[in-house]
Length: 366
Image (cartoon, rainbow, N blue to C red; front, side, top):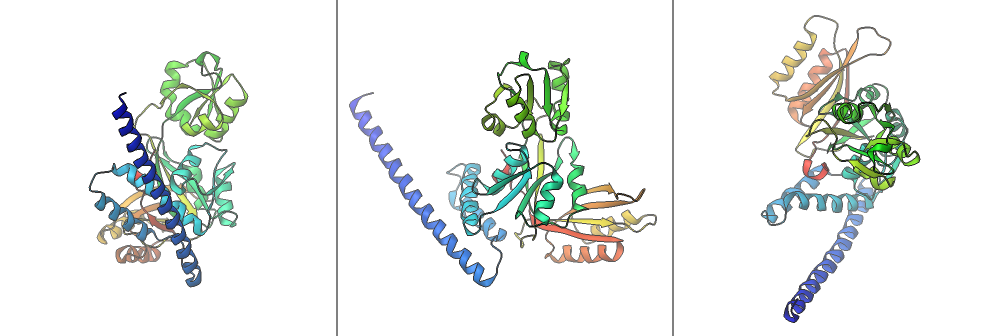
């Protein structure tokens, strides 16, 4: 490199260093203002999280950017900044299906950022119990997968615990086969959670036809086993590779691309309107012909978009079911409010599980 080019390179790098220092100073100022807002909200006893305000920030920044800075990266950066500043007002404790490096843990980090306190639990039931009893502010649980469908253990927990849904996140799932050595010849058993095993069944059948699989309660637990036993391979997340110092045998062994899991954030209180929301309900139908059709027809007349319906049997009551409904809109929206009043009148059981901002893929997908 010529002398003039070296001088120019040093000059440009100095400019970048100067900009970085300015960004850092501004981040400190923003954090200070966020703490001031937290104190004002404490005095007025207002909720710390204002999803409408956050959505307005993203919309303003996107418009001002005019496509100069990559939009997804811009939203991801400000998602971390906004979340960190919000958590400075009150640090969030988040329960997830552990141990560390499960997809639930990864979804939690994507949603809350790195500043939250994460608490690993052994089962999804435990996550719900932690939130219901107030030992953590939030929990994050998987509710459905684009390939394997609903996570029934999560749906069943809504029938047992009194919590509310506060948010949702979608995580694109890519499964890695990992082990200590990184050599496929060392693997004598493949361990993982039931859903990843199902999502990789064709690959396993083709490439490891004689190797048995072992179902465990989480991908993180499988990664732990692989770290402790050189003959166990695990199907695990990218986070597990660094957490447990494992080697990748094969990346992306899922049978279908576009594999996405939706997670729900549970807490004690749903947030206010963001303008782009989803409302979840748990209902029981009157025992008469056409009950479900009557409910769906009434919702259609209110022009309510029904995003999901899933039935689950009521434990101890043969052939009795409760239905989970997801409607697009917030409980404070007039048509959603009318629809809920109608359901209360027509249904044998009605429970509002929460209204919360719809997922923004640019800030939650990996």
